[in-house]
Length: 633
Image (cartoon, rainbow, N blue to C red; front, side, top):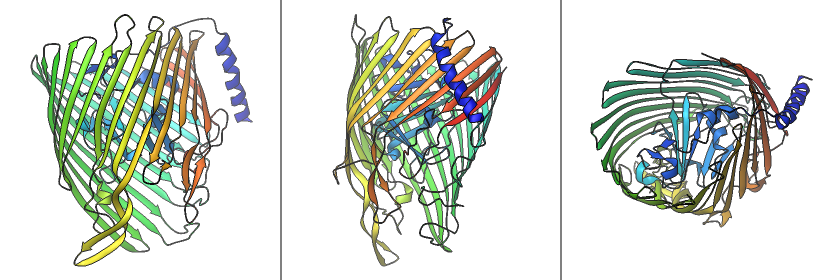
């Protein structure tokens, strides 16, 4: 009964938004001149960047009531998200059709992909203490090295506010869901601080699918001298998730525990007006434990468990030399030491894997702006791994803004690579002779402001070729004088993706913002089998409408549509190729600000109660309801 009343209330809010006459300003702006650093490692405004970059500011995240980073990414053109069912399930992000392992994830510019398998699971990453998210599409190996074959996602945390501010949030929802969050930011003389902590829990709809997430992050920055500052960043995340597997299995007691931490120390100085230097030291630690006790339907094999501990130490020294307004030279080097210990136990028999991989790299880039309307960029990088040796990458890009029409043209070509992860380098069940995966990509895009900058539209054509992809084949290893022949990882794969990504942002009134994105992934093909890549829909898009009314109310309607995509049914033998049906997911949110210190909010997720699966056999949540409040000080 309660769910019905809430649903009716949500529907009644829609006509209220439509008939509202007052037009107060809302806090979200286009922020088109947001300074980003992901694209070229050199502070650059979005409008003048030569690469395809999307910036999502924290104001937009708050208005849409998104709670996790993967929710935010679903509205970005060229980005596809696939989650194994309900909150807490493994979540992969595909940029322009590339594999999930081809997405490099940074926190404040520091690599956080798992040192064991080089992937990043977006399942449990909340939006706490995030200032903005930068999404850079296309191969970016020149500046960022391994994993950046499909693109880069940089999560930028908040710094201390000019005046001390804070907030406390509490909300509850369907399936006994609960979320609490607290945050603080302030500046005290030369010291600035920001911190946030949160807790989330939900029983979800399926048996053994409960999730619990604890998260904390903080940053302190201190101005040592006029031209010298130091900052310290720390993040910590712990999660527990039941793993029932697919709906054909419904395992009653499997679970996965994860604990991640990151510590980053940055020293930033400007020895002269033309020299900007930055030294970054970081340590990332991750521990995962998967337990699969008996029974194990549907095959009922013996118990299995796996414990993985990985550590990554990184050093990066970056220099920017500015020669007038026209020339900028970037030069730097990095060192990466990745270590992993993995212990798997099947029916009492353990298997061990321990490996350390090091990478030393040098990179450089030249930015030339002969005029304010033209930017030319070229760069290269050489990585030297202890496993496969040296590997080089390059990238060239250009941006031109036409006079009078202010049309922005962008074009780029570049390469990327992915070093073989430690998981696949085992001499027992892996292949220590693997070469890096490689990609070559190019793009051409146009962006046009219209209606006195109230409307911005853009489209980009892209094409990527992937070679040396690691697949499965017959591997021969000699260990201790014995020859092992088995099915293992080999560099045998090839793939191609091409398509068009479009976007539009329209602010017809000061209290209305409309954002739309559409991606046509015309080709996403495995060139070894001539079949479409799994979980890559040809058509996908989103529409987001924000509307402020009656001075104190804000409504948000977010609609995502995803076309059919191929997948595999792993519950049969042999495995069968299937199709995930297309779906429409609509979320409706409403916020009320009785005063500047308090906000009440309510939202309905999956408003249409659409039954769909992003990964075959893993049903997403049906219609759910949330309500809560936030106090600010």
